[in-house]
Amino acid sequence: MMASAAAAIDRPVTVFVTMDAVPLLESGEGWRRLAGSDRDDDLKGRGVADMETLLQACTALDVGMMVCEAGLKGLDVAEDALRDDLGVEVTGLVTFYQTVGDGQIVSL
Image 1 (cartoon, one colour):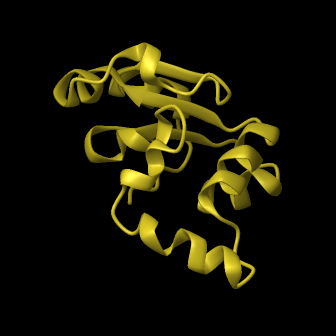
Image 2 (cartoon, rainbow, N blue to C red):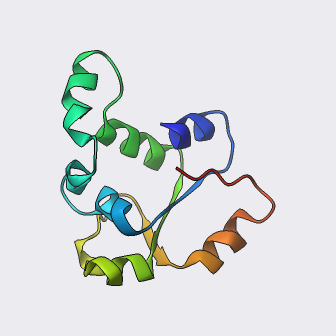
């Protein structure tokens, strides 16, 4: 939600995903394996944007999506298991830090 909100007000945003968050970027609804994802349908029913809506908003708002190569290896997830509709770049922290430069970093 933070990424799409920031991008909506023209702030440059790059999401870097690693380890236990990797399912967020896996094909299909991999994000449903994330902790708390069981509440997604309930929140959607209450008029709150669901994860799929937020991911699509990020794509529409040109949010960069990066996934940690070490995180993929650590979880034994192949690159071809990642979603192809989000423009996910397989990279490492150095590239993420170079991309962000002097910008803000928010970690959750």
